[in-house]
Length: 133
Image (tube, rainbow, N blue to C red; front, side, top):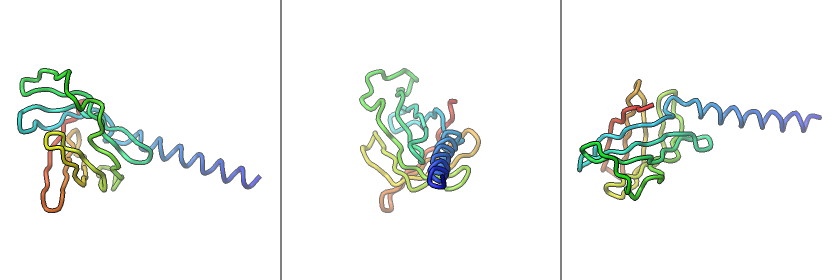
């Protein structure tokens, strides 16, 4: 009976950990800051196991026209973001499609603005993303 109780407790713990990630305040759809060409992306951030990940959902040019043939739709752009507090995540990775580089990344949330930054050695980039929903 004790073994069943322990297994049940572990299962509940895993379910609530996953449910907590699903309720993360960063989960949702985000508009990236325009890149060098003025284009931007929509990124869906959602739980991936006990971390947060982001997937490119849509791309737009500098005139807000959808780029339906954008080659990276559906690809991961953020992965392995670990919770560092209620509104901060770190130790993740972010891929910059415009430069095809992957950076060590962190994020912090302030209302409907998400600060996203990534560094490779001493070279860092950061953006402010706006929540869409």
